[in-house]
Amino acid sequence: MVDLRKQILVVDDSEMNVDLLKRRLEKRGYDVLSALSGAEALRIIDEQPIDLVLLDVMMPEMNGVEVLRIIRTTRPSSVLPVIMATAKSDTSDLVEALDNGADDYVVKPIDLESLLARMRVHLRNAHGAPKAPSPPPSIGIGLLLDDKYRLDAVLGHGGFGTVYRALHLALQKEVAVKVLHAELLHSDEIVRRFRQEGIAACRVRHPNAVAVIDAANTRFGVPYLVMELLEGISLADEIARTGAMVLRRCAEIISPVCNALREAHASGLIHRDIKPANIMLSKGQNGEEVVKVLDFGIAKLVESQPATVNTQNMAAGTPRYMAPERLLGEASHAKTDVYSLGVTLFEMLSATHPFPKIEGTAVQQAVKQLHATPTPLLTVRPDLPHDLVRAIMGALSREPKDRPMLDELQAAVEVWARRWKEPQWPVPELGQYLQQTPEKAPSASAVVGDEPTQVEAVSGEIPAQPSALESGERPTHVEEQHRNGKHG
Image (cartoon, rainbow, N blue to C red):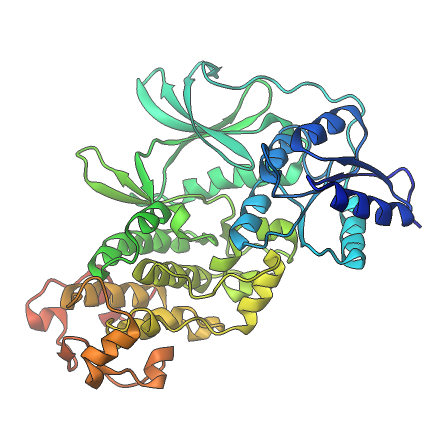
């Protein structure tokens, strides 16, 4: 029996779509209001007691994600659930919507029974709007936090907070300050996750992990984090700019990431969201590149309990980089990060993703990945050494026991970056490559990464290589650990 007090707002720029859905929901006992634009929807939400919003993504002037961001500045999910209803099924749009606070996502044509089931779940979980909400304190450029940090400019916005360029007045040093949206203070889960980022980052003291300098609350009770200020671009931006990377460049970036993760794992911390967007290519004091691992906001202590699978957890992380155990809500461990690192390496070397985007929700993407085989790396980078390919494809194994250790994956990348370089750049497509070098055609087992033979590289047969000490090279930290039987 539907509670008739539940009032639904349907937002879509198509009058026909709005009318059809309105009539179908009213027949099921809901009170329904409608809006044909984002601006009209926001006005109605301010004036009427709305219990749930069905929001279209593709709208003129103000799209659904922009409307969602504004809604979330004053109304968290616990007060006003938002379900995105759209014909657009690109996973990037889905992830953006979830990152900005969407509770669920359905694709047109909408299955009414499925939509109703989702609505009932979110309406049960919503607490309802407070009777007399107090206006949030104003936090913005020019504000002085605790008489120590002056907010000078906005660096970026996220679903939970805003990052400012700020000045530490006592030290006369520029820093980055991340402030939780004050309107989200009544969400215990959001506040907990925000504080967890500072706690987790403080546990990882490494030059390749972003440093948290301070953590406190404003006089209004709004938590904030003070971090080192990084200048540069993300690895995601670098891949978008350059496309596929040469192996040596990949090693320059991935090795510092592995070093930071090793330190995190030694501290009992699993990052759980390694991806190109969370790897920063920053600049050091002398202009040199310094790789930094960002966003420990969803990091998890090894001894803590695994999370259950739900839409909120899908938003806390990016499904296309999640290990199967994460998608299933099972316990995370060091090889959970190895999986995400393998996906990142695949993307760096090929500028493509091992799992193609599908039409559907984050849960549907997760289900697809759980039952699909990743694209073989050799089909997009046929020139790569097969031993290296086996290590990367092994990192994408469904079973954690079949994945290499972090040190093993790092060693494979570092060793081959020193011993081998691309004989041709850009790399020819597979068909063209096989025409040029038919004797190098990979076997079926090599394509999927499980061939047990020794390495065959494009430059010719490479027999078992001498160790660093035998060849006169200085051994790397990783190779030394291998000789001593130690793994990360």
